[in-house]
Image 1 (cartoon, helix red, strand yellow):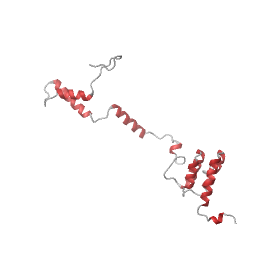
Image 2 (cartoon, one colour):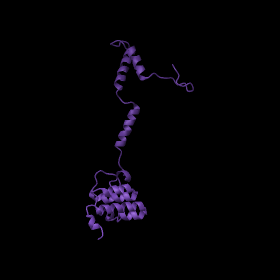
Image 3 (spheres, helix red, strand yellow):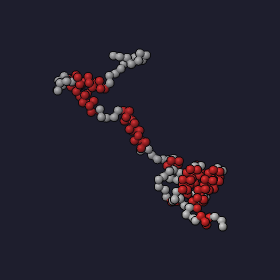
Image 4 (tube, helix red, strand yellow):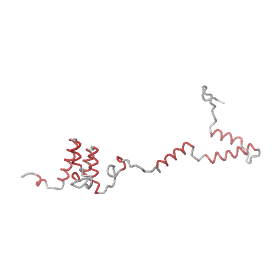
Length: 174
């Protein structure tokens, strides 16, 4: 028997396939007659049956994945899953100005410009309050952050939104 490591002197066990080959070599007769051959034949059948089953490590991985899938949703991660602060493909018309406010609070200038370019965004979204009990507006929050580039991005996007579809001759002074 070979030694795996001379320091610990652990024996190398034969691999399952080698064991299976050895068993099949010993069980060569169609009907096992001796008790040893019967034991080996039943062992070979069990090995054949268990070949398709996952190993204990694979079974643990599968159970862990299933546990993650079945995990209870006790808390909502605001940045990722909340409909207001998250990125959703469908948003109600009542939450457009809330998404704009969330982008302003995050300081996301590109997000502000992208939201304002959206044709579904209402024209007064920059001045619409968050809710009846929360009177914050995206414009006031932008001024509160004192981030001049964010303020200018919001004002430019708002001016562009108001100017779209309006005759330019009406905007220029006489």
